[in-house]
Length: 132
Image (tube, rainbow, N blue to C red; front, side, top):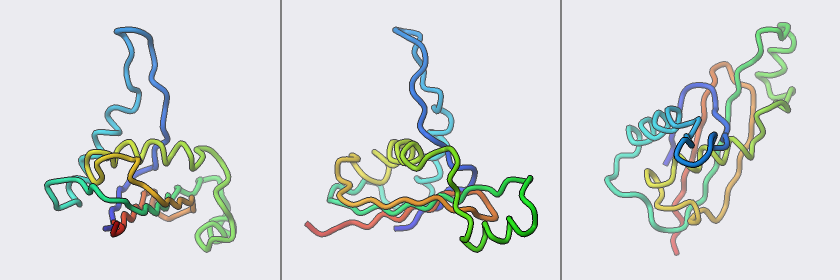
């Protein structure tokens, strides 16, 4: 199953505040991601078997790049080595996938992720159920 979420990839952020005043700074973004996933996932129930997840984060090209740099970035010669890091991007995405596409993130037995420059900022997710 393939999912595509348009927009700038969002990294995980720690909860802010303390006690009763704590809040999730990524609440709106998480709701948006889950809404986009529900639109594309046409089943009423999440997957309950082991899964393999492959994610590609297409990061926007900075406007300060020259034409040569933009061409290199789009061709894959220039890699995205700036923030946000892949680990934080994955934390947020797996939190969004949980309870929508898969029942729990402990079902993920294999995961690959990469960041590349793209003409349009988006996130491409492939979830493959494994027979167990």
